[in-house]
Image (cartoon, rainbow, N blue to C red):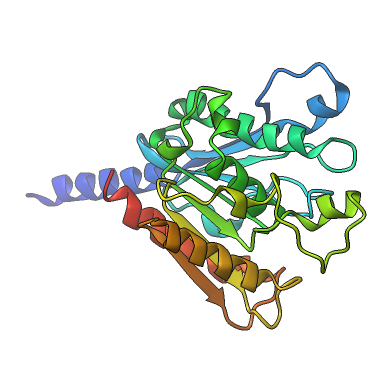
Length: 268
């Protein structure tokens, strides 16, 4: 190869590398038909994607905030990593009942199944993740199959559920509406623990430090993990982020999420 050809080859290689690194973000896409004002305001999502990638793994991300607050966002650790990210808002307590909020979460996942190939994502590689309240919501809709079935989606087709410090008993702000304090746990139809089953998708449970977590959250998640193991679930793991409290634990947890995405997509 002469010098001119070598130079051209290097330029083309550099251009290809630059093209691979180009990402775009579409914001405030409605994920459901809504006529009511609050639903119109909240039921929107953002999509972050590479402009020239196909069949990429997808992360549907639900924010935290106690089901009473919070806004969709995409963490820097998830960007520029070959992933398509869908960050969804949902309605909040007390302006909306919990059933509507869970339905929002299911509708956002269903929108992803229907539309993600337009953004280079794969319907076979949809991971649902979220922090705190987001982890709680995904646990419910991923384990209780009725929520996604309403939209024609089989929850078992999800690549994995990855809750970051998600409540496993009935959420404390739902209990607050029932006049129950945050230290008195209940398990009812709004508790992920109610729906443990052996045939659920892979589950990666990530907690903060047990001594720093919110309201005994590590112990909830450890019990959740144990019950899944006892019913015969074959792919469930539990991590404790030593030294990280409830708010800070996502920082090291994103790497675990990406590691499991790599592990599980190699099988698909």
